[in-house]
Length: 66
Image: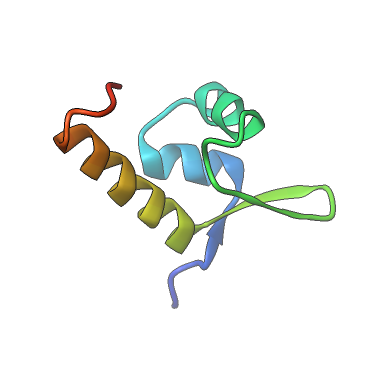
């Protein structure tokens, strides 16, 4: 079985270790990358990984908290 290319909201929240509510709030503000496929919101795994890397780099530089 191959790894999924994109996650649905519940799966993405679980993968990130956050609540679905937090994920939805960050999605609405545009902070979390996502794609719309009709009425479905998808979170491409590659985009989430890049978002995590960039966020971790900013925190290590002292530019962002939480």
